[in-house]
Length: 299
Image 1 (cartoon, rainbow, N blue to C red):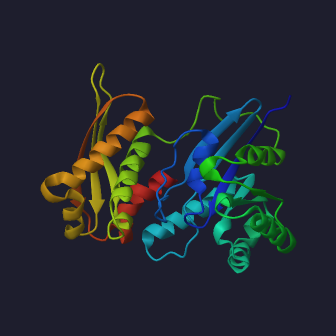
Image 2 (image 1 turned 45 degrees about the horizontal axis):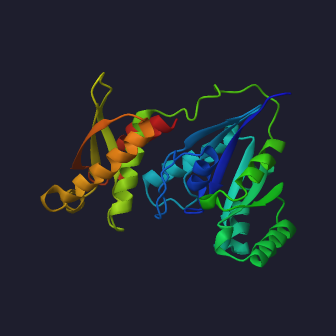
Image 3 (image 1 turned 180 degrees about the vertical axis):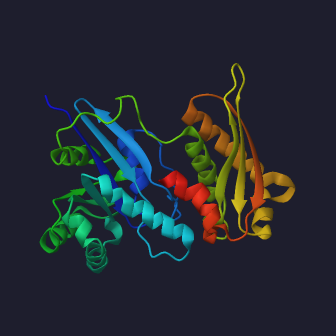
């Protein structure tokens, strides 16, 4: 039997469930997930291999209008995912479906969609009735020219197997790009920083999350001892630093405790995690900061 392999870009508006879908497909938490929009900043590569099929999924930042330099980078990450993609998964939050919004999105990426196979994935169908789902499918099929429409619930993994089968139909015959044991191409340092950021986003209100960047200062693997990780939680203002630290250091300790457990689950080994907070004024618009920490890594 011929092997099939290809790249699949997962795109959609913020909070449509892209990262939840990738995690459901892989059966593990590779992409961080929080209720807050703009959680995903970088492309996340997740590799699914089963039998004679290998799919390299690319989770992307949400589609948005950039308001600062970091968001320009996020749009670059999204649009660069089209370059190698064989298939595009356009994820729609079915519970918030609006024909006009989908039309705008379709118009904005008309050229990219015309050059690829596009599967419209209606996510979060667990939040609406079956009749409502059928109405949306009917509307989308009549008014848009997507190659397929697949309803799913990523959070419960409902119909995800059917989505995989649909994707496989559009994959080219190809040798695998990676070994069958490989789950991602990104480093442990990257995922450790993402886990720390995830726990920060989950603990704080609106003032903090969008201004947080996590920098890994040291990452030492030590024989017969816990790995040592030292990381900085970077914010834009002194007032935000005080909030991150909390009274008597209680909040940053809480981030550390939660993040350490998640990191150990991810790495499969014990770690010693040391966190500190620091200020980098207006880092989201600082090109030199972003080029060193985001653009180089993203490319």
